[in-house]
Amino acid sequence: MANNTTHPDQMYIEGLAENNSAIIQSIYKKFVPKVVSYIRNNSGDDDQAQDVVQEIMILLFNQAKAKKLQLSCPFDAYFFLLCKRKWLNELKKASNKGVTIDEDFLSSNEPTADLVSQTEAFDEKQQLFDAMFQKLGDKCQELLKLSFTIKSMEEVAEKLQVTYGYVRKKKSLCTGQLTQWIQEHSRFKSLKIT
Image (tube, rainbow, N blue to C red; front, side, top):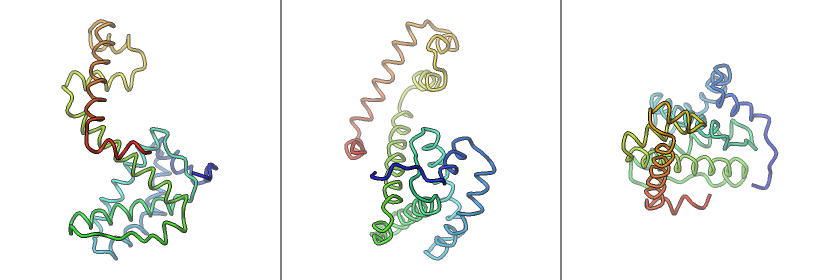
């Protein structure tokens, strides 16, 4: 991205990362009605609109928590475009027909389009990781989940009631297997560009 300055609306992203209920309520009050209206006017209903909003909110929460989102445009434009593209993809899946995204909007709003592309790539990577993670055995999943939340491998070993050496070796094997499955997956090559 050419423009690296953070937009003042970054407060919404930070609020999501902190699970700040006032910020979340503000997002629902200020930005969601526009999305609901758009989906209602484009072959959808209130329930479908709420589903789209919920999926996008979870995606933004995950990306904000991973500290992978620096807003360089207004939150409103970014959020609306994410929801709009999600809805158009839902329509496309339901009808098996091509859905055209208004390229005029994208090209005239380049920072928003860049951010949306980054978020969609983040979502695809997260989905691939989650799918491959589920293929791991229960012991690997438990070990890796603990190592994501507890920084000290000694504490992880203590919690699992095994030796430190075992935890290090097992984590290496589990991580290696997960990495191999991700890299061998057909979607991996298309995700590497971002």
